[in-house]
Image (tube, rainbow, N blue to C red; front, side, top):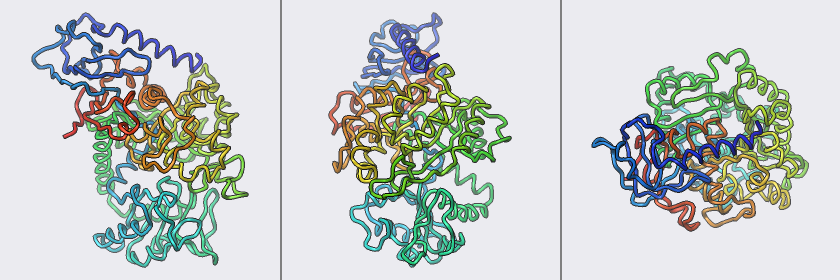
Length: 571
């Protein structure tokens, strides 16, 4: 069946269900566990509004509508009744592309997303060093030189040099990941442990930034990061297996709390290892996952080939049914693979981080195991190569729903191909405004205007577009990403990035709910509020369809429900 036709027919079926949902569909008098009333309910795109919903004991929507008089047989003294006081109620946000355990780790380590200078970052690291045993690594993430209030006065290529940090942390190896995840900063101690010197060559698909005499400055881009991260992993391996798992579990507890506090009821993880898959299975079996988790397996082809037993896996709240690969890096670190050179770096077209032939082998692996293929592609060359590769395997009739993760910069000629091939554009609204400070500088005005974060053009061409934050690259807060999607404006007012490509309010809500569910073959389970689907929903302080732009950013999550159970409430 044609992908778009299948998508529309699914929506129509849900609409029919919702149209008759004021009375529960079954004749059995199953008692409801929860009644939410006096709410302003948006069940999903093109579905009729409602004011009340009923949740069954199995955690699904039992009924939804505006007239509760016919529901009396389904209520009992034990039914919890919640007066929403006209709060806005919508399906729970689905984080369409993030890094679940990575966010958990970042919540426990140094976080520089809000840092506005290199001096501030160095001070944070120095403070952490005072309380860290000598020899232990100090880790952090989130710095971005393009977002500092002022450039550092001792820098090369816009990046600071490691000398100041190295002087203050002589007894601790330090690794600080760039916000994009496609570069890192290491101090002298870390570089020594990694064996990095002036003579160390740049690996394929990566770069060691150097000073005028050839010495490493501390910045490692794309594949060059492996030099430092391998040294860090050697340290991690000195921990006992129990200690490594305990640290991981602490991060998982932290990330679940953070997601639920932000109204996220489902999370699509863009890169999970075999070991984590087994640990997630354990958590699912023990009913220890408080939200739904859908993950992409992420390993090299050699590591996955012949080792895919038990996959795909479909659990209760945990699912691993996709494989992740990548073709390029990030725009901010000149890693996005472009058709034409960077406007501000003539002669350089970015990094092809994984050979196309290797990604093709991974595509065949996904096909053989009936799993979705998800490919990170940011630059227009990477997107074209990915579409060309996928065209060899996907057809609208096959309905594979293979995905391009990010799809940030697309040549206008390739935009219609997403709908034609049935390829999902798994995008992140907040990336547009986060990158707005430098994207036009990197790409030039015309290329930025016609092909950078082209949500409007993709939607008008019939593509399915999802939303998310790429956390911990950005804050996991969906409200900020929603604001970026409908305004194309930075929250700090510093830039508006070609607003003609903005989504409408409903399109943006859809991208964060039903479209994301659809992109994981879960539209018959979650993403809209109709009878029979999961009672995953969130109550917000403002109606995101009609409040002012300023009020969007002021919106608070009042409560988050997963499977009809309240998992968060604003105190």
